[in-house]
Image 1 (tube, rainbow, N blue to C red):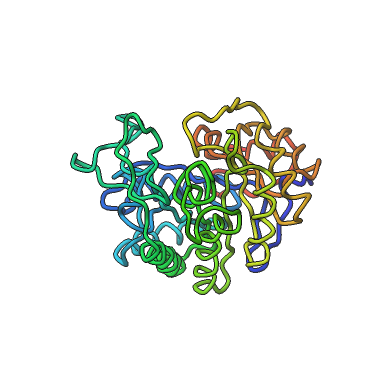
Image 2 (image 1 turned 90 degrees about the horizontal axis):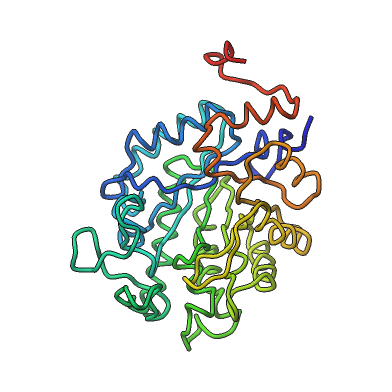
Length: 354
């Protein structure tokens, strides 16, 4: 049996293999509500053999959406359809997860196949963005975000807490906090986007405080759920967030009961210098795993079974997160298992295709 198709035991949940569907925005919601597109999109990965499926960035407040088409969990009415989704996923022996998010200054954009740039606050499907500091992501093209006051920061932490409560009610067993890709929490972490002079800006300890307080608030809502955090381990830019700070942050998160660090990179600034290629993000996950001992997930351009298995054999990560390759092949685990010679269960309805 390969490591890829071995179980991974966490405190309250067990992944049946190490293949997890990474969150992927679908830009297909209305007023934050999930619909049958989301049910089929997420459900297909459960019938296809994934151990867990992490739902796309789901906004904790309306202005936290990347676009007007994003999912939301800012009101109780959102829960009903999410329950239908999580029930289906569980019926097919996979674990449902949700990524709680706030886009901060990178909110109020169009759908990527229409217009992925910021929509002005006064325009249709546009709104005023917020951030730790009044620094636009694209200063020459965008309206600057409004800096959050201390009171508004506390309200946002409460929004994450209530969103986690709804996520638990909806049946999600993995709660992932989105602290990566230049969205609001990452904006607080990075000195390139956070120039505050109060307790939420300046020093490393101050810049991580917003995330730590969100973690502590969400933990109050969890019982048997597993708490994960996605980070960008580097800004790929001088004087920005980097691996050393990521390792130190992971240590703090581990102390607070975070079980998995989902390691991605980039997204904080438009002038990042990044060269996406195979394993370009893996060294960051490997270093965090080695230095902290926390369970680590790696993501980015992983498309082949042998490659995924080698990462695990080399002890550079514990979980393989895959996004685009799952879009191309929702039954990816079946095909990976065939390559590695591992017998795994197929749905009875599909066994004739073996």
